[in-house]
Length: 294
Image 1 (cartoon, helix red, strand yellow):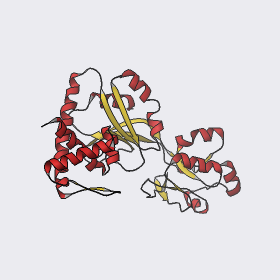
Image 2 (image 1 turned 180 degrees about the horizontal axis):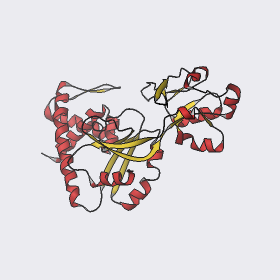
Image 3 (image 1 turned 135 degrees about the vertical axis):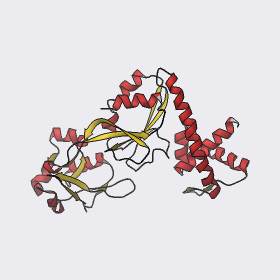
Image 4 (image 1 turned 60 degrees about the vertical axis):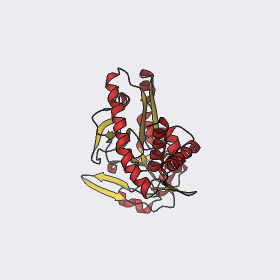
């Protein structure tokens, strides 16, 4: 097989997984036009349309779906073979792609990446921070980070630092005008931000006390998917916010925000780095795991 053949197949694989030429180009480190040209060359060479393209979407044809199903195990085997070579290297090298929730990424990586890269000059770290649900295998990540350890089959989880918890916060002025809620049930009488994922789906404010779990779904007029914006809205004094406690740490210390319902907020939980269970783990991913694990 020619090098160009493999490059065209890799370009098709990236577009098919991401359903996007732009995101495929970002993964491959080339322009979107180069990806489009490679896929067009592949389709011309095989004489079959593999992708349906419109100005807004990309979808697989029946032939494209069959090709993708055959390619993914093959590319996986190639990756495993290359990973296996790392056992003969003394130092980590190459690229490690990580996915993490945007809302907590600064607390995970802030004190880790600098020392890790200084210690391993041949290592390249690529971090994609997003709060949308991500299939790390389908999108070409080496590992992902999530709260808790519940995973699908075929994944390995490693406990990492730091531990995190949610907090309900509001400004002193807000509490002066509206009082503090004493129980989660009191929140129905308060202005509360609706927390949402980038998809638009809302998720509840979760509480726990004496073994009893309670979920509260806000119905306030403000819906946000970014915890920094939630903190800013709470500081402005018109609403309560349910955010990662560390996101509001500076404002809590400065006194521009105050906690409420602290006894009801669940205790700190562990974060986990997870990755596909495989015989070989690259030296680069091993270095990341060792730098982050508890």
